[in-house]
Structure formats: structure tokens, C-alpha cells
Image (cartoon, rainbow, N blue to C red):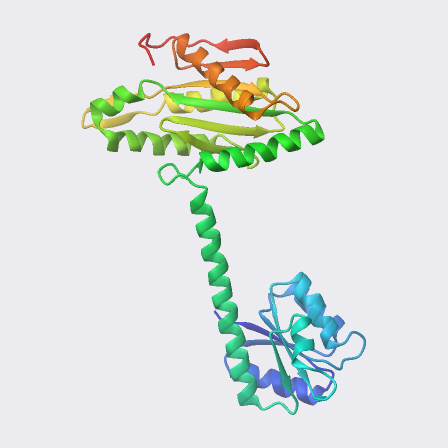
Length: 316
């Protein structure tokens, strides 16, 4: 894809000749006679590199450079015919990627423009790589949900917001029922398929502001900002029902269901986060104790009503 280049110069002859040369060199070119006009173009178009004279009517090219770098992901090459008045360091300190002196030799300008574009591409590739590495560091490789390390970091942030703004925060803790038996019967590869499918179902039931995590093994946690325990029970029921209705085929001709037990709780202002998690864990074990495949909730030390659904009476 061609790069978009904007020429800024109040001299029409220079502006037009540079514009024509840039177009002939295979780029998409725009032109303006002032900083103010250039900023308007930047609002409307994605510009990769601005080539600007320093001496302009109104805002000069160095101030324009500073404005561009503070607002847009755009590189700037500065031109000047006053080599004694402006230094390379001054231009760089304003955010310019390069400085070229007039009269401009087209071949030199093209070489510098290609260098700036190459460095821009490499920088963007490094940023993308770092973002991917950052995402990998907080993501569970199997389910593509966040991992437990990120859960604790995010829980601290959400609890801080809850304390500061007095907004509710709910936590779900999910455990797959009888998952050890499933793995022992059908093998861990089939168990991994269950985990992957459950991860997708959980994601499909959440809002953008909610975050889901593989807490460990067959356990998952979900943080629900701006959500009370009663509201969170509705989300938990939606996830539970969505998982229960899925048919798994670990061996040909043999379909089976997977169910989960869910614990729901709501954050108490300024409480210790370990108690927050332990309370969700106690609520989840209530679901296990009372037959599995259900949602139980505890707020503070008070057990809230649970959704009771008949299921197997086996343990764990």
C-alpha cells in the first residue's frame, strides 16, 4: 500500500514541484501552503510523512512538527534554506525525523524519505511485536482467556475503582463438574477440547467491560464491573445453561454433556482481596455440595438463594 505524503510550503513553485516528484516516485501526495491548512488535511487523511518548510505564514514548521507529533502517528521531515539559523538538534527536539536544507535535491529527498518510511515500518513492527508478547504473557494458551496472573492484577484495579467510585463489582468462580473423571475416561486431549469450548462460551456471554480468566486446571474466574451479586447470578446462569446444552463427542457415537458449578459474590468496600476470592470459592463449593450444575451466591457471610438444578449426586 502506497504511503501518504503531505508537502507543506508557502512557495507555490517549490510546493508543486515537490508534489509532482513525490507522485512520480510512487507515493500518494497531498499539498498545503500553511500549517493551519496542513492540520486540516491531517484531520481528514491518514498521512504517514509530512515534509514541511520551517518558514511559513502563521504557525512555523517547527511548531507544526510539535503539534503533529503530539496528536498523530505521523513522521515529519523539516526543510529550511537557513542553515545558519536552524540546527538538526532543534528540529529533532521538536519531533522531526530528519532535516534537509534547501535547495532540495530530489534524489536526496527521496533517499531520506525512504529511510524515514523504513524506520517507521520497523518501529511499528516492533510495537506490534511487543503488544503480541504482552498479550501472550497474560493469556492462557489453551482457552485464549486471560491467565491467573493477569486476574490478580486486574482484580486489584477493579477493586480500586469500586472503592473509589462506590460502584459494585461481582466475581464468578466456575468449576467443571467431574472433570477428572472425564479426563480419565477420554484422555487429556479430549479434556482440552472441553476447556477450549468452555472458554468460547464464557466469552460469548460477557460484555466488553467484563473479563474472564482460566484460574487453574478446570477453574475459571470472571470479573464483572458495575454489577451486583444478583445481576451476576443472571450472567452465571446464562453461562451455566450455555455449557450444559453443548454436546461433546469424545469418542465416535458417544455424546455427553459437561456441566459446571458456579459461585457468585460481590465485593465489600475496602475488603481484603483474598477474602473476596475465598468467598466466591465457598459459594462454588455450595453448588458442588448441593448437587452440582447450579449457581450459588454468598454476599458477605450471608448465603443468597441458589439456583437448584437436579443432577448427579457423585462427589466433586
